Amino acid sequence: MSRITSRIGIFGGTFDPIHLGHISVARCVAAHLELDRVELVVANEPWQKVDTTQMQAAEHRLAMVRAAVGEIDGLVASSLEIERGGPTYTVDTLEQFRANEPDSKLFLIVGSDAAGGMDSWHRYSDIAHLAEVVVVDRVGFVRQRPPVACRVVRWQGVDVSSSEIRHRLRAGEPVGELMPAAALAYCRKQGLYGC
Image (cartoon, rainbow, N blue to C red; front, side, top):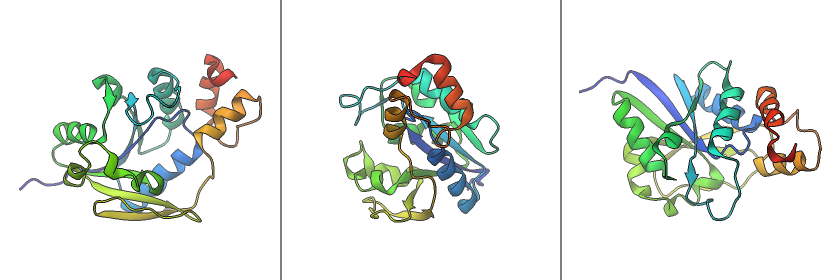
């Protein structure tokens, strides 16, 4: 029987752009579950969004995540899905983490909004065999549960969305209180979202 060597949170997303809510969730779950690290996995081609949303290129989204987590202990920007290429499926990502770190315990971190639709995910029934599903409940929002066993972590944090930040950047409105400073600086340097 193998011994668990580390506890790893897997927190995937488009991060288009990353914001302080993402950082707050990752830190909250890491503290609550005593995780060794949380991998913020930047989606390459999220299959549920690829035809509906125009996203920044994966390399820009990864650079913003790297900038955002640069000095935060226990948070890591992961390019695993980008390196793999093609459509992004959570189950494939978990299988790759499991193969790379077979003695680690994996925790898949999802918001309650995404958890309610997990039964539409590719091979969703295999997910619970690869990782413990952790649903983050935002205080004051309707709770949804995935069709698999899960653990719930309550979170009261920054009420912000990536779409709101994109809108504000395009409109020339301030977003400094919503985005990590290093990610915002990268965004401005690259002229992303019309800023």
